[in-house]
Length: 260
Length: 226
Ligand SMILES: Nc1ncnc2c1ncn2[C@@H]1O[C@H](COP(=O)(O)OP(=O)(O)OP(=O)(O)O)[C@@H](O)[C@H]1O
Ligand SMILES: [Mg+2]
Image 1 (cartoon, chains in turn yellow, brown):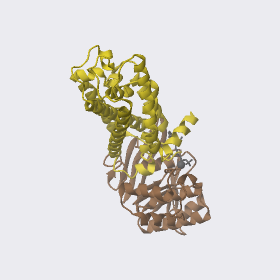
Image 2 (cartoon, protein in one colour; image 1 turned 30 degrees about the vertical axis):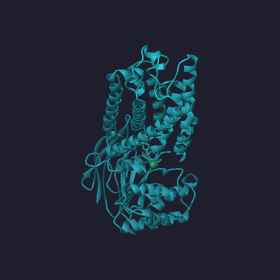
Image 3 (cartoon, chains in turn brown, yellow; image 1 turned 60 degrees about the vertical axis):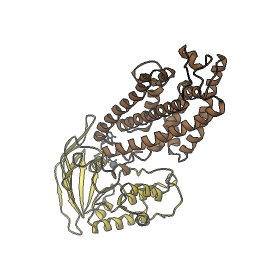
Image 4 (tube, rainbow over the protein chains, first blue to last red; image 1 turned 90 degrees about the horizontal axis):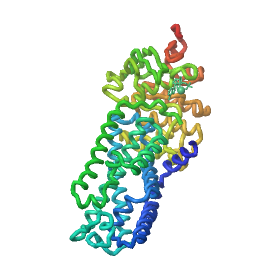
């Protein structure tokens, strides 16, 4: 337990963590992309750039954990000042702290998503020469849905869907982390809670799994309602988290403020 | 400027840590809190800082009730137990970040505060590499750098050398001249009598006595405590 805590502290206390994050992320995406490639090659299917974008986010538990871990370090780095007593007493109110934290979380989720989308799109261009092949009989799309499209899907739709789902994914994770921090005032509990939350979201089918944004799938693109719901649900979920946080923050107490 | 605590009680998970606290602190005076380990000095300070809320009673800061009209006192500087700063930054950078929250002071005032506690503003060492006494000096500088109306110092001198203690005397003298309300906790009776104008004795979460330390003449009043 102590080792874990120290490990997290070292990482969160490191000012270069964001650089580390931006360096590690491409490596991680390459890993998950090659997994996708190997799988499709085994099935003798053709893949397009759209497939690479869609699959590397949705597939692979191991890569998911690596990704979550990176994001977690980033989140901890982002909020490392916020609960120091010297910072707290200089704020207007507890609720205004919460609001400014949400602002920070939104901004950083946005930049993480932009960066991830950019990197992944670059890889997609390198690994494949076709934007979209969902009209081909030999595509992963046809293999999954047992029918093919008349005309190929615009890759920009896929990029946008990827970006938005990524954004909600990171944002809901950050807000969840913050909520736990406000509840327990312990970094380590926040980290463990987020890991459990993400694992719980990624496996099995239940309501969290549904509203967690991994729900952008091939079906989403053929049925507009299926695309709408994955976008709307995380918004509602984030709204619930936000409301809970605003209530919680106002009632929060810092017994151990000043303790090491 | 005043702080008034009325019938304050604080219970944490069934344990009463503060009970029946009725005190009024006035601007321009230095108040000392004294008592055994675990008697609730630090808790009382957290309460005044707005970091915890009373279970019963009110904390009135200049007419505004803490936890109702305001979350934290509008103008306060505090060092509570161990100073906590960002490990990876220098002392100056730490104070710069904190000062930027309210934007009341600039770099020059921060340098000034650091010099007053005997730290070099241009020291390139990270906070992580500070000695215990240096950390405490930084904590004190952080508490008064923005010229707040209330300064709360929890055991500010226990890691300081003689020179450091002297500096704290000077700082408290300056603060008093400026009309700052200062609350300080300290275990050393002699130091306390030199630093404070009034001393409150605490025991088991209650205020059990009150001493006036007024130059030569001193009047002592002590109530019966549990
Ligand atoms: N985080 C906490 N949660 C619950 N109870 C606490 C917590 N911190 C302190 N206490 C309890 O509150 C009481 C008062 O503690 P406090 O830290 O205010 O004492 P103190 O007078 O500052 O002691 P010291 O002289 O050692 O600094 C103690 O009984 C302690 O056990
Ligand atoms: Mg104490």
